[in-house]
Length: 149
Image (cartoon, rainbow, N blue to C red; front, side):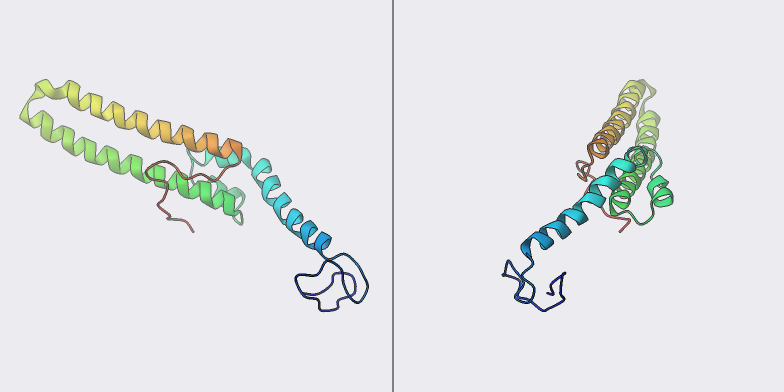
């Protein structure tokens, strides 16, 4: 580590530079604060894009391609889309089999489809709320899957 003022090499546990006497701990604290501010500012500036990523997952990849927060929300939106499509495919196959057995079970198959649609909608709303708060919380159940790195 080097002093920001005079450039002399210093150890990491000192509070003042031996060469010029400038405070070192304060400079390190300012650097950490300076790095935290852009992330918070980025989350605030792109909040609408991050919220909409749960409907259009590719939106943050286009509008802010270098953003790690944007990639996180785009990944969550993509996983949600894949889960939704896969679930509806499985449900339509299941519904076809059930209805082939007896047409009287149409209410049961309809109920399953509505339950899946409501569950996907609830996950999208949870993701949108997290994006609105500026948090990077994974979605329940499916949020641990990473497709976009």
